[in-house]
Length: 420
Image 1 (cartoon, rainbow, N blue to C red):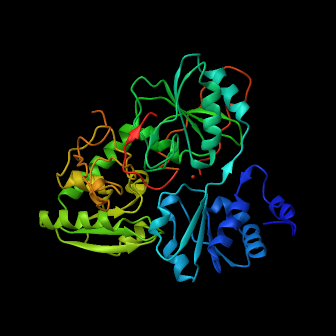
Image 2: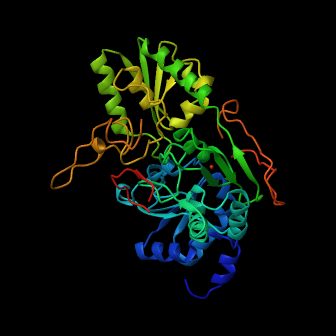
Image 3: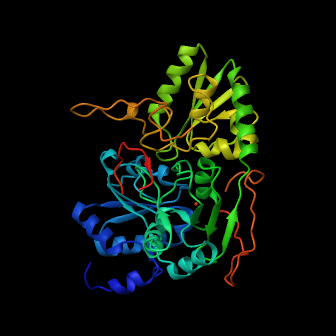
């Protein structure tokens, strides 16, 4: 990408957003791609036309912007990209949860869109509000992981700082359905981000650790609370109701790669063993009105997004379980007092999670067997009435009282969660 107004083209994008334009152009040229699909979350769609213009101008390939909703890394839609005749897909804004070697017939590039923030203000805010020696777990989404690591290095001399990792995610990275368990002596979780959805994931996994959020846009700092008791009571009630269901429905999410056929097969085998009849249903998005069209189904299990059941399950007329909750209802496992947030974790609670070893392709040599119960590190957005916002009065003069309404390396490794 030389000359020809390259600086002007890149200058049309915000300076603090790293869209990796030069790398993208080089990679598309190297692949000799003819049609390139661009996929990104709605928050980045305002830059889609600019990116498409750059691709067409500097690679000669045709650019196609995919406009379907993209909630997260699980929504990588290589199937639609291929159906559109694309031979290359660029996915923006998420980590590579779906390995690039699994998108057969389509070359792929992930662009994390690293966002530069005022790291000095973040560091100053944390120094203002936590005493020296405090044990802090710093977490974020992939866009801010670089800033998180920079802040961690700066704070290390005076604080015990962790960027906990739940592989295959990067250190400090969270998903809405996947978060690490923290050491009990952790004093606080500090989340860097502009919404609550991802923060709630690690709050659910660590109910005894206070959680705080630093908004990099407003520079607001607040303590966040979550009603664990109400969430757990609601999910237990749904499980009890589903346990007596005579006919079940299994939903496979078709929004990108949300659905896991391996988990669906596991659920089918479990229901067959229990003598429960079931219906399969493929849906890109799951709505109460859609499921009401199946009055004979008395309980649903959705293989799409666990948070749909956790956050919005009460909005559905019939129980809408996660695969883990279905395992509890079918008496395959006992209810966990700390709700597991391990849907994409390498070492997870059982075969109702995506990356459980039982779902991985067999490789040469010996394989290590992992017990569904002992192979997990467990030690023992959202629905507005469950996730209560609370702002404390913090010392200092920085803006800490303003809250914004909630809004959202790499090949998979079979490994667990750690505090590394």
